[in-house]
Image 1 (cartoon, rainbow, N blue to C red):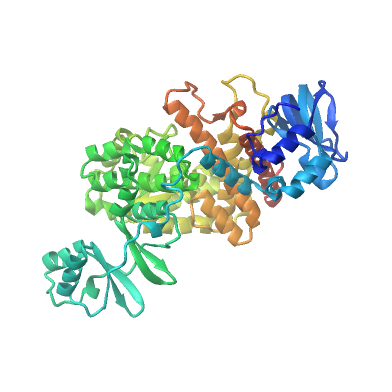
Image 2 (cartoon, rainbow, N blue to C red):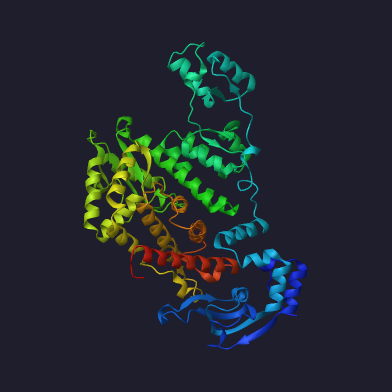
Length: 605
């Protein structure tokens, strides 16, 4: 009998009896340096689990500088795919003296037959395996019951619905009787919402009579959610649309209402009160206090095991509200309606979880008369700094006149970038493609985006220049697992995040996709048939994995547990065997994506 660690997948998919069969059925084998354990084309006879040492996976048909495609170390396993497919596609060569547990083919096949989940593990794509990682976190004692599992139906209250002929006076009486803050008005199959504030404004500010039909003040553009959606998603919707309630709709009919106070009371932890604090902030000082709590909110959400996509959605909405409110506090209303404030880069894509640096710009209406605009933008940049947004090292901020212009001026700038096609111009085009309007008149950005699409989407040469940047950094598979010292690691931003983000951005430009989020762009590309749905899902999961690993490094530095100035470096040895497997698979997906870009845009890779 041997002493094996069976606490990691895929062995956690076996029961006690299955794990006992593993322990009794494997042998511990020694392999010397440079020994080939399994060669390309050789039948798969064993699945190997590394106890100690290092094994390289090599492609014997590739050029020598590209032959090394993966690296395995203690806790990793290999050889299972060779059994499932009959022969090995690659060569597995010992780089450091190794001890490996060898599971015979017959035992592996019997376990696959007796435990379908065990067999499925080896056939799963990245998207399925990352779900397994989330499940393991839940099983390890992480409390996910709050945000992750709560559904809208658990928090909604019954809707108060009145007829379109109901008067304002009758509506007020119904609200008082029901102790509700809002009601729904039915009108020709549509439903509008009326709040107590709407009623007060109508009576006091507009001078409406009590007999006036309440339908005349109803808002029919509802922010809605389904009863089976996560309650967390409802909170994101409220934050993004700046509303205090969502209407719960099922089969096109309202079945409930969820108020912001209901959501926040459901989640009793103070960490989840940031959204309410932001809405209640009446000055810059209060806004700064709420903004300062975002890092703690991120830590709380990650500790609870919340799915990263939800965290990104919420933080993008919260950051957008902070910037919007700061703009409201600082800029006179007459100038706000003549301009559109943009956030760009990772913030524009909704992928900036912790505040890194400012990336913003301003579009001003052509007929705008704003004499002290430069001073106002300098003050705005300084205010964002006090709110926790560091200055941009590249000076891409509204305090820089190069990033503030009229609508027609921006069109001329875009045309100049397209014409020049040098490195700086291409980078600026990429930055502008990710722009998202967070304050002012967003129609200014909508028109500029259309002009950008018209200028670029059919320009094959420009698209190829843009796509080439996604190949600048090769997926760091040749470095995987070979770095010994804690200060070393894989640069996950260069080798993982950037190739996906920029490659998808280029395809989105070609297809005139309005979305700025990489995940939303992937969904649109799959819907248009430009990417297979499964591959798009795996690309999305790879990106989420890279961002999560990077976020963990950033949170470690935030806690003072790491002094590294390289927040993008991921130390492979610090990961679990499942995380290493996911990272290895994700980097392969990046390499595959880069090869697809090479083929599509006729590039050299």
